Every structure is written in C-alpha cells, then in structure tokens.
Length: 162
Image (cartoon, rainbow, N blue to C red; front, side):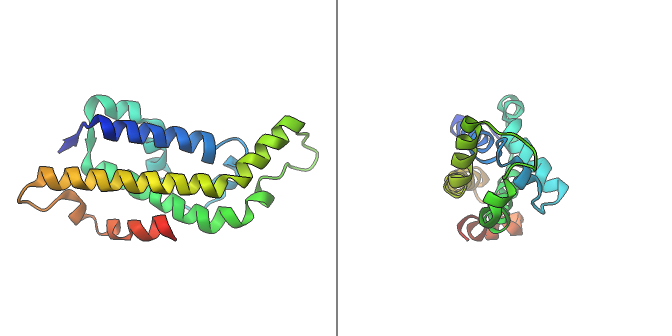
C-alpha cells in the first residue's frame, strides 16, 4: 500500500524542518556526526528529513516509512545517550577558531535547547507513528497490518521515552 495522506506529509515536512533548524544545525552538527549509527540508519534519516518532496508525488510505501520512523527513533535514543551529556564540550570552537558574539549566543541557544528540541522531535515522531499505524490497520482490513511484520517497531516506545 502507498500512503498519500496530506496530514502525514505535513507532519513529516514539519519534523524535517525542526530537525534541520533545531537539532542538526551548524552548532550541533559536529557532535551529531560523532554519533555511532550505522550508514543505513543515516541514509534513512536523510530520506526522512531531506527528501519528503519525492514522496509527495509517489506516496510512501508503509515498510519504507516505518523504516524511516525507526531510524529517527534510534537517532533520538542515541542522541540522548551520546550527545546530550557532552554537547557543551562537543560544540566548543576549535582552538584558534574565532566566533562572533552573535554566533556564540546562537551556539549557546542551540546547545541549551538541544534536549528540549529532541523531546519535541520524539513527541512528533510518536504522533506520526500512531497515525501511520492507524491508517495501516484500517487499510489492512482482515489481513495483518504491515507494522506487525517489523519486530523492531515494538521498541519504538523505549527509543522515544528513555
């Protein structure tokens, strides 16, 4: 089944924008790039946050969308464990690198609000998952929904809450 729900498209686009502006921005990108996620997960995150326009025309295959949702959930989980405790250190300027007062303020805002912005992403991702799963159940009818064939989706709550 291909999902072509405007509400889903809008939610994904909003999450991509939130991710680019508030989570993976020029002040936090160095710290984020140090995270230990496999290349496949990074590719799915990029698909989810950067390439939603492609899906607007063709729709999302549910198994692909669930994969992207899981990748983002793994990102949230790992960012909380690996980035949040060390972000101030990881985002500091390199020795000899000059930073303007304005950039210092923006950097401090990005660092100080990172955990809150990550929580916003987690909440939106959970809402998206619930909506997609409901549409999946509805479309499946008497057959098992697609999410029942992806065992890791049972971990999504743990990824988004811990």
